[in-house]
Image (cartoon, rainbow, N blue to C red; front, side, top):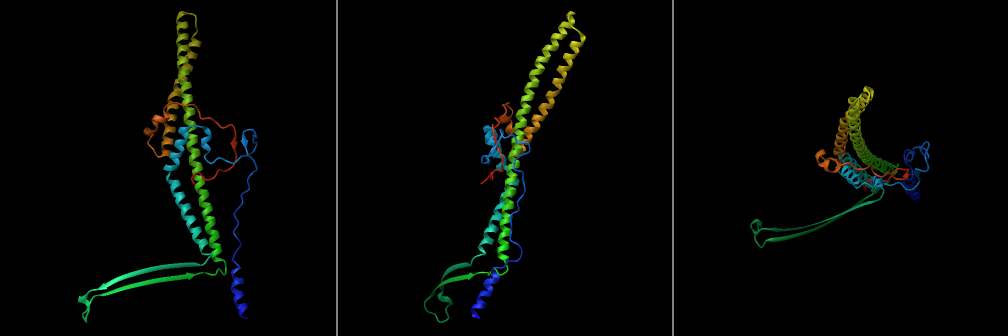
Length: 281
């Protein structure tokens, strides 16, 4: 009977309320729709994907953006808090022991002694040892451990998602900037050529060898190109401001790096498909 009484708590400890936690599996396609196998590979994904563009300025801007973003700091703090709670919940599965010690040295003055005599010296040593263990009869500790682990995994994925979004947004803005700068350069060169063409058609019209139609068409093409230049300049200024916001800096601080036109970054010959690991370890 005594053995049976000891086995009952052990049997109850093997029971847990509710189903075991299972990490949800999200169904995803094996490959992108109409995937070009020549452009995409199956190698391990690259965490710092922007380095494939081989642009040192882009690398520096993305690092600045990841370091300056307050949302990332909040997400990282939440992940660390979830990690600590998960560790604490895991420790509850095992016995816990605490030990503390203290030492006190006191001296009583002669003036305080009723009977007189020499001063008294007292030394006190104290050591405390406590141990406890919660028997997980109905799985409360195990379920808490599973819940804390799931919270940590969710917060880690939130952090990863925020990192990828910020890096991708800055890379997109940087590509837009370089593309707009090339369009502006083309428009300015076209306006110079079209101005020469207009002046030539005007000279031919005044000399009697040209037509009013040729002159009007050349004038319309020139003014259409000139009208595009302010819009491109405005778009460039807006893109620089966007990059400044992402990096937490003033636009004036980026002018020296971003104002000089640069060629588009080098595109990788093959893109690895998959979700990269966390950008900030």
